[in-house]
Image (cartoon, rainbow, N blue to C red):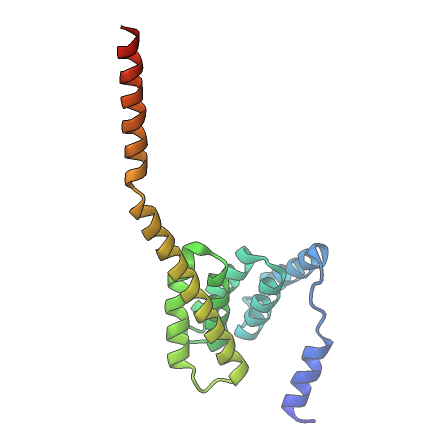
Length: 164
């Protein structure tokens, strides 16, 4: 049996967590394995996938940091970090930069991976453009509170004069 077929069978047999309880048990089992020795790059990629799919961002970021320290130029780790940045507005700029770097360094990766990073990059571009446009609109309306305050004070002055 070829290595690719064996890997495919192993992936098909993998039981991924489907709810919060299963995720917790799955996470506890991995934490127990960590006590015996640090996880390898493949185990960290598996954890990144499971945590990201489950929406466990904190654990996913921890796994991404561990994978980054273990294998700094890991293409899968970089791709997962880009995906994690998509969901955190504070990291959109960093995610866009990571996506651009990933696309430059990993153009020869399988097409679905490249397309996923391109899609994340495009989404980050749209989100950053929308945020910039909103900031410009807000900045353009900076005079409104001052006008409202002036009208309020002017109206108050007229009301006080009218009583005198």
